[in-house]
Length: 116
Length: 114
Image (cartoon, rainbow over all chains, first blue to last red; front, side):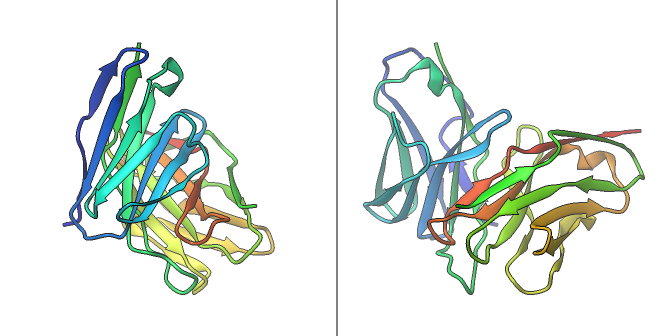
C-alpha cells in the first residue's frame, strides 16, 4: 500500500521561528511536491522536486525553501515564520509524467501549521 | 495558461439523489484532468483521471466524469448520493509547466442529507 507520511499533524509556532516540515514516501517516486491549502483557494504549489537535490519553484515559493537530500524525503523550511503562513501543508509524490502517461500524485495527511 | 474553475463552492443533495459537481478548464494544450476527493481530516484521494483516451471516465465509488472539449468542461457526476460521499472535491488540470505539475480548483464542498 502506497504511503506518504508527514512528520506532524498539528504544529504551533511563533512568528520568526524557523520551521521544518518533513515528508517521507515509500514508493520510490522521483517527484515530490509541497502544497499549501487554504479555504476557497484550493491547493497551491510551493515547490516541486524531480530528483535528489533538484527543485523547482511553484506558484507561491516566497518565504519558503526546500531540501531533498534523499529520494524518499522532502523537507519544507520556513526560514522565519509569519502569521500569513498559517495554513494546511500537504506533501505529495508521484512518478514522472509525460504526454503519454500522466501519473497520479499521492498525498500525505497534511500538517496544520499555526503561526502565532 | 492553465486554469480550472469549479462553478459551485457548496453543493447540497439528499441521499439517493444525483450528484453534479461542475468544472470548467482553460488550457493551451491537450490537458489531463483529474478529480480528487478529500474527506474530513484525511489526505486527498484520486477519484478519476482523463488522459485523452475515452471521454467518459469512470472512477471509484460510482463517480464518473465526461470530458467535453467543445465546452471545456469536466463535470463530475454520480447517479445516487451516499452519506459517505460528503467531502470536498477538487477538479485538477495539468499545469503549464508540463504534465508533472497540477493546477487545483478552489474546491466544492458536497453535503449529503438524509
